[in-house]
Length: 83
Length: 83
Image 1 (cartoon, rainbow over the protein chains, first blue to last red):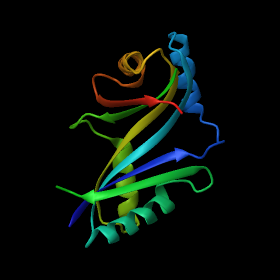
Image 2 (cartoon, rainbow over the protein chains, first blue to last red; image 1 turned 180 degrees about the vertical axis):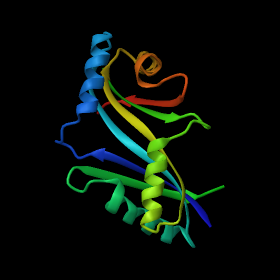
Image 3 (tube, one colour; image 1 turned 90 degrees about the vertical axis):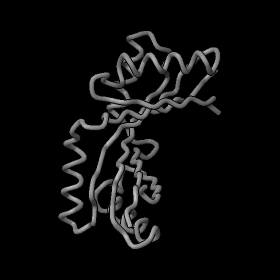
Image 4 (cartoon, one colour; image 1 turned 90 degrees about the horizontal axis):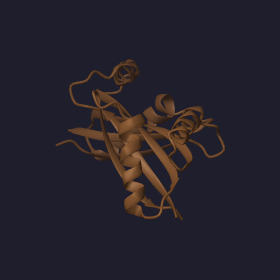
């Protein structure tokens, strides 16, 4: 079976986000009333697995090992069957 | 009023995604049964506006002007009142 996983990796609260700060400053220079900007990344992964449970476990492991940095990142996973 | 907007910027179909390809190759080297990876970016923006309609219009304009590249990116916006 094929599954589609979405992994959203964002900085933990309190960690500085230079890309977000630069984006906020650029938007302010264009006169938008922006207070704060945070940037996160979404990995959309097409994978094979024998069940949704196995797919979720694999994606959890990928996230821990490769996609997120446990020191500074949080991540959120969702998995569904691919159509 | 304060609003929180989420803008997800992703590559249009058919545009190559070097970061996604590198991530896919790294996951394959770790023996994960991954077919494809696409990477997108989410901007979470805290802004001031007088109504949700105004907030949506502002964020639509920011996306067009600064956050997304109209040649290669799609974007999807959602806005809600900040608590």
